Length: 192
Image 1: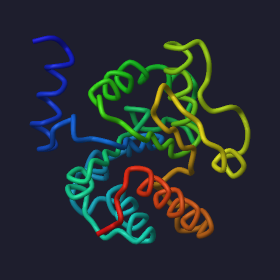
Image 2 (image 1 turned 90 degrees about the vertical axis):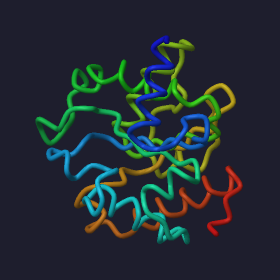
Image 3 (image 1 turned 30 degrees about the horizontal axis):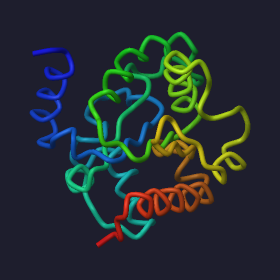
């Protein structure tokens, strides 16, 4: 078996889902300090954030149901924050793992970049592979109204989807929910 086959087998075993069924990857900024708070741990803070955002977008689901619908959520930075601002070196240290993770999915239609760190990490991967950034510099509020593509995959900048900022900045919750609705329309899911 080659590395992609090993990684695919790991993915199937861990998530009970075939990577070929994944149409969307939502890349959050950073893993939580406690692994029990990550996306695929039932009732964790990260999973509750995502489930709430999808609920606001009109889709009631849990994390396993998202996977079954072809939506996978991961983190760009694979080690917990060491400071309030994630240093570029910490982002770079996770790039190989993020790139390998993305390589599992042959049928992607959309990549959502949930926050500036996710955007930086993805742009680094894209620049390494194509020589240019996918998403230009600028405020997410302005950038999110434009269409960006990486090969034939739609890339959507949005806001970070976890953490206390969602409790404080209610306007961002609405914006993220709008972005999720757009993503669902792109992949043809009518939030059954």
